[in-house]
Amino acid sequence: MDHVAILALFDRDMREGAQPDGPGARVERAGNVVRQVSDENGWNGVVWSDVDAAGADAAIAEQIAYYSGLGREFEWKLYGHDLPVDLGQRLRAAGFTPRPEETLMIGEVADLNLDAEPPEGIRIVAVDDPTGIDRVADVHEKAFGTSSARLRRQLLAHLQADPDTVVAAVALAGDVAVSAARMELVPGTRFAGLWGGGTVEEWRGRGIYRALVAHRAQVAVARGYRYLQVDAVPESRAILERLGFQPLTVTTPYVYVP
Image 1 (cartoon, rainbow, N blue to C red):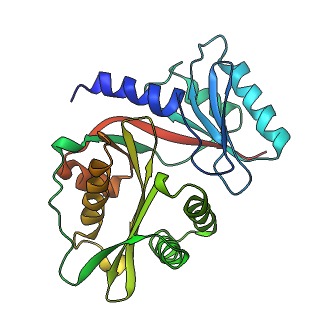
Image 2 (cartoon, rainbow, N blue to C red; image 1 turned 90 degrees about the vertical axis):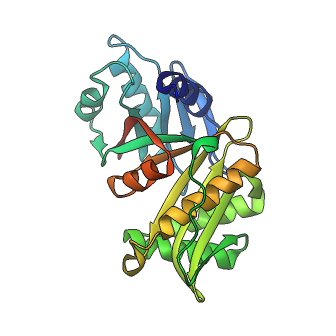
Image 3 (cartoon, rainbow, N blue to C red; image 1 turned 120 degrees about the vertical axis):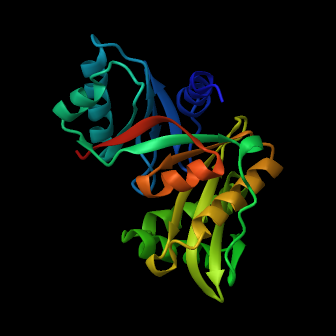
C-alpha cells in the first residue's frame, strides 16, 4: 500500500469532500475549513482544514464563535499530518480539550484476511429493526460504560431515512448480545468506515471482535468498496494489524464546550 497516496485520497474523499454522517446533519465549507453541523443529538465538528500559521488562530476563533452561537459542543478532529504543525497547541490555547489519541488504520479489502469465523456458540446477526438497535445500544453501554442514547437515536434515524448507508451487526451467545459493531458506507467514495466495535468484558479475548471486523469487511466487498477505515484504540490495533490493516497516521479529537 502506498501510504502517502492513500492518505491523500482519504483526505480528499473523507475529509475535504466529507458527506453528512446521518439524517439531519449538513456539511459546510467555511473558507479553508470543512465542518459538520447537526442538532444536539448528532456530531458537530471540523473534519478538515487547510490553514497556515498566519491564519490558524483566526480560523479557530471563527469556529468557536460559530458553534457557540448555535449552543453546540463541537470537536476539531486533528490528524497527525495536519498543518500548521503546532495546530494542536493552538487548539489547547483556545480552550479545546484533547481526548485520547487514536490511530487511523486503512486496509485494502483485497489484501485483508477475511476468513475469521466467530467462536463456537456465537452467531453474528445483521441489525435491521429497532429490536436489533436496542441490542447494539445495550452492548455499547456494557462494553464502554457510557450512555448509548445518542447512538440509539442515530441508528434509528439511519434505519428510517437511509438504511443503505449503515450496516450494524450483533454477536449473540444464544439470545444474549455480547458484542456489536457498525459500518458507515459513504456513497461515491472507495471508503467504508468501521465504528463502535465493542465486546462485553466477560466475552473478550475469544475472537468475536475479529469476526465482526471480517463480517463487515465481507459486506463492504459485496457492495464494491475498496478500502476500510478505522480510528483504532490501542486495544484493537493489534487485532486489525493481524487482519491486514496498516497504520497511516494518528488522530486526536479536540473538544470545545461553549
